[in-house]
Image 1 (cartoon, one colour):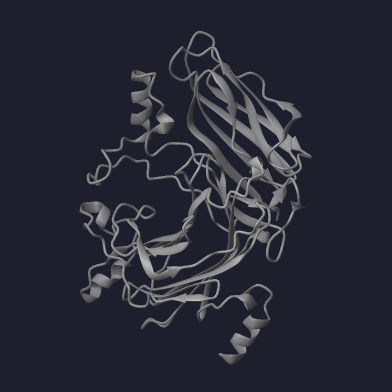
Image 2 (image 1 turned 90 degrees about the vertical axis):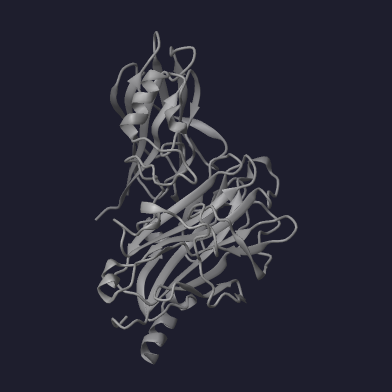
Length: 315
Length: 115
C-alpha cells in the first residue's frame, strides 16, 4: 500500500489528489470529454411526481399538442427546453487569450444560458454494484462572461456537486430494501459572504434542494479581481454507500464537519419516483452552476477523480 | 484513433420569425466541424430558415466564416462542413415567412466535431 501511495504521489495528476484505495474515474479533460454530458430529462412521459409536476407527456404527445396549438412553444415544455451544453475549453478570453488549465490546455466547461436562474450541468452516470465509501474530487473554478467588462463576482449564484444514488437490488437478498438518496453540496456565492450548503432533508429535486446551510459552512472562494483571471480550487466529498451518510467534505483547505449527516427525503417521495426501479446501483454525478443574472456563467473542471474503498465484498 | 464529439445544441426548438443565434461553443481541439440541421416541421405562408457559421477569437465578437446553409423551407436535413474555424463557433441567421404567432420551423441542430 505504501508503494501504491508513493506511485500515486509521483503521478502528475493523482499527485495532487487524495483518492481512496480503488480508482474508478480519473478524468483529465486534456484527453476528451471522458463521458461527461449534458442533461436531458426522461422523455417517455411521467406522472409520478404530483407533488411537483403536472403529468409530463411523451415527446410525440408534446409535438401533437403543438400542432393543435401553434402558439405553444414545445421547447418550453418539460422535458424539452433550451439548455447550454458542456464543452472542452482552453479558457480563452479577449484579454489574456488562452489561459489553459491547472495542468494542461483543456478544462470541462459547464455553461449556463444567459438567463437568471438557469443551471448549467454536466453529468456522469456510474453504476456501482458494490458498496462502501465513495469519494469525489475535482479542481474547479467559476466565472461569469466578461462581455460587459465588469467583475461579475455575484453574477454566479451557486456552484454545486449533486448525486442521485440508488442502492443495488441484490440488497434484497439479505432482507434490506434498496434506498434512493441525493447527497449534494452547494456553494452559495452570496454577496454577504460565501457559504456551503448540503442536501440533508430536500425532496424537490436532485439539484433543487431545499438546501441546508452547514453550521461551519462559511468560506470565501477566490474569484480574483479580474473577470478573466481564474483561481482553481480543490474540492473533496466522500459519502458512504453502505450507511447512506456523508463521510467528509473539504474545499480549498477547510474541512467541514459533515461526518454522519444524511440526506433524508422530507417530505418523502412517493411511488415510482421514490423507488430504485430501473436504476439499481446508480450513482449519477452532476457538477453544475447557476446564474444569478442574465449572463452566461461558467464552471470549469480541470480534472475529476472518483475513488472507492471498503465493504464486505472486497472493495 | 481520432476523437469525435456530437453536441445537440437545439432539440425540438420552435423558431418563430426573427433572428436566431446559437449558444457559443468552444471546439479548438477539433480540426473539423459539421453543423447538422434537421427541420422537423414548418408552418406559415413562406417558412424560411437561413443559417450561417460564425467564428470568434474571444467568444464575444463574431465574424462570418463564409459558410452558410442553403435556405431551409421544408422538412428535411442539411449539413455544413467547416475547417480552419479556430476555437469559438456559433450559428446565426433568421427565420421568416412563418405564421404571425407560433413557430415557422421546429428544428434540431447538432455540432459534430472530429480531431
